[in-house]
Picture 1 (cartoon, rainbow, N blue to C red):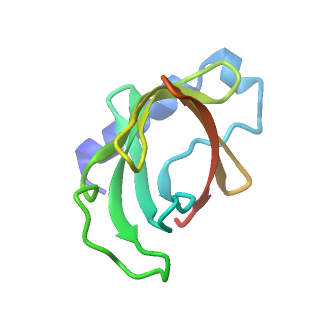
Picture 2 (tube, helix red, strand yellow; picture 1 turned 90 degrees about the vertical axis):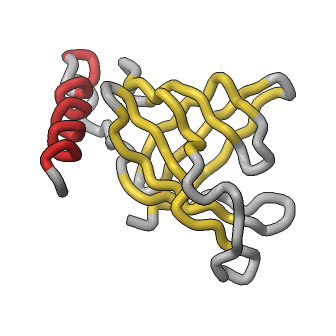
Length: 135
């Protein structure tokens, strides 16, 4: 880990140490590598979450087909989670872009038991997703 990454993690942890969050010992900071649910075509995204300033963001590292093989995609390297800010209840609120490129302007995520629970809402309604932790 280079010094700028270390400083970013330290800033995020300091932000998360607010009194409201400290009351709930079950708060899990969702930094790491996550596997999305398959879409209609069986495509799965591997998304790395990390600090982005005082917030968190997530970028696609790999795209897998229904058999689990890497598949070429313009999604690789793209940011799909934006400006996720910690909330008093331990969740994070921000924005998301889904597999089809739809902008979901109100996305709430919460990490529990190695899973990332997402509620993403946009113009076409809301969707509930569960991503699994890979690392």
